[in-house]
Length: 477
Image 1 (cartoon, rainbow, N blue to C red):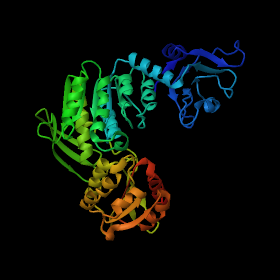
Image 2: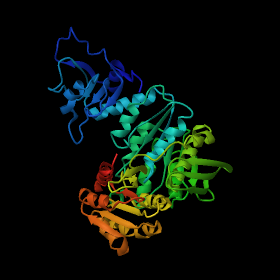
Image 3: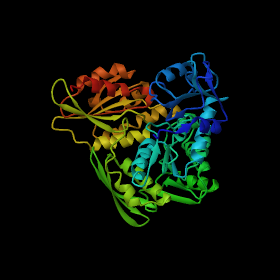
Image 4: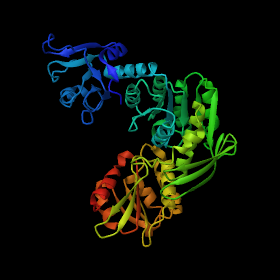
């Protein structure tokens, strides 16, 4: 991040806030003479020189202003001058810190002359964002968040952190309810918007997949004039998405997928548990794509990235070539070799970041492509999928078929909803179940033997990431 992301006067002009200092002798401290190298909302990860933004969310960020300055914050964006701020601490005081962050985001966009891409969808948002980062890096400086940061504060934070000289900005936009994407896409004003797919994620809140499609389609509302959207050709809501894009005033639509009429069509995919190779037709022209991440779902995400590259006017071939060295994202397929106390090694596939039926099926396909060493097994450790509403039991039971197709030898499950899957699978593969992840971890670790491939996947709320951490901690280093 550039050293001078925001000066005091730039930040004050963007937010309409008041520059001041907390106490101290004004003759000895000129509060306006500061510059922020970056922005932080979390004192635990704040780097010296960053401005601390005191958001009021699960906790009131004003409680941590003193900690921020102790860690070297250059200033703090606050809604009040907190008593715990040290004397002379430079403050930028606004009415509402979240609105102040949005103001900084809007100003960051307006002062930058690069191109912006926004990604949403039921699955694959973060992986696609990382693919875009890698692909567009072949053409200039790319700004994107290191984490998902796709909600009401994450999107403006990512945008406000965008350096003025960025050639490209990549933004992930998520939602749990209808109406949440619209203000975020209008803030970003992307030149290209991608919808990865429409699945069942958050169906509990939205009621139906059609409502999910409509909520995702809100991303069209912010697309810059003359911009484009990249849509999944294989999805059963493709025509609805096309119509909503047109109603939003988007004139250029690019489709991707396996459908014969897709603009960017996947014609062949080959891969194992470590990498993949895709062959595609891009508006009729052949293109080979080598992928550092395994799974056909990553190949399809790569096609959406190619579509974005075309919409941005850069070389599809160069963009695709940049994907070869990009491996799976942590929590989304990253693989680790774990040395076992009893001897030998097992391979851990970490899919613990989140889960819904669509992403579960994709993860099973990766596990199916994995080849255990002689004597090894395919082991699935699955946490329950949340926010599925009344369809939850049936959707969990429905995992039995793709699980069997993947050749899973041993199954561990976490959470009450996973009982519906447990009761559908053969007794021979039932290895263990528990109400919570921490209780199940010892049984999973004890079961591992040389040559095993163990995949861990579940919704964030199932906390199966604790099992991943336990397996890594138990491994000999």
